[in-house]
Length: 547
Image (cartoon, rainbow, N blue to C red; front, side):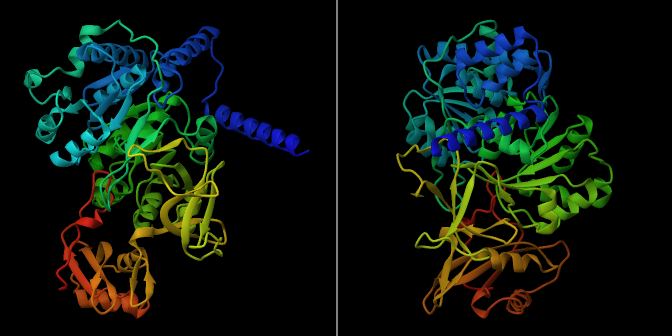
């Protein structure tokens, strides 16, 4: 009976997956010749995150694949150009291509390089556009990157790698000047090999995504896929994507979240509209001009949009939007609610990890009830909140977040892996689940401080500070203290025109939280340091003990 029960359960999940994929338009009636071409794509390329480009070219060849500052490309054009680039990269190297490092902003060259690497069976190393030269060099040496495709604006950033890596091969994706300094360009390689195909790859390439590195050196996380059709259906079940519609992807595509939105768009044959640099008003204009049904952002982008003057926001309707999907860090509750008050119930906030993929999603209804929630686990993902002895904690209590899913995380490129307990991955975050089953991420496990023997999570103090009408945003860290072991230090950005003192802010916290949670140091800043995806870089915050 047990085996039969398992078989019936698997069948039920399969049928549920098919129903969701059909409802989204992902599975749709097509001519037999299109099915044959799609089958040939899978036989030639295997199944990788970017196989969707060639599948979309077979399904809707003349449909618009992407739009950037240079114009638009159809799926057939994008497929042919990535074929040519794959052939050109192999010819330029004079042999097999094992790893392609990409240092690009959001534009066609990024997508073409990513897709070409997949067709070659090469691993792809996605690099942070905010890297300094030494950081970039360190990551390339560690990950074995000897071929880099980059925007010419990053020429100085690449310089240290030239001396650190013998025979570094460079290809410019977005030139800033005619001739690109004599280096080969993506366009030149495509033009020279247009009409050619690279042939069948000997293996499916993997994507190496770098962790955010907000508290240390970014680690390379190797992923071969996102959990297959079941994981896609779990996302579609929660967020109303529809095939062959248009999505504006503002989130950086080198980051796990932005990369995922690109890969999903290709899989769904959705037109991707992108812009090299984020601009809050320009993003709204793109949504309206292209009648986009989706907008993919990191939380700070939504916040910057809602910081625009009211007269600017009044220029845009966003009437075509079905969803705004965000992930990557905590969103300001006031920004979420104000966006939905103005543009409708369309915001979906996801808890996503480089190592685990999509974990949970908060729907607009969840965010209305609790704007700081990360929502409920998606179908196929199990969540446990445990204490230090791995026992489940009661609803409302804070513990370590552990996850079990079908994510294809294959460990870090260093050879390390995440900690697991009874097949559950330890996320490194701490959080709680309320009585309605909604998850709240309290912070990083390694951010907890012990002050005078009391455990303090900085997020609680940050939220209290953010609730002050004079505060635009705040970050709280622990610093060494001779008397208490550690003490809290707050770094605060005030709202425009606000007049408030550090003592006022300390008093505000003391009126709402226990005395040991009141920051001893309060430093007023013009802005908080952030990485390219909008996460606050707490390791760059320092205090001299005065405030």
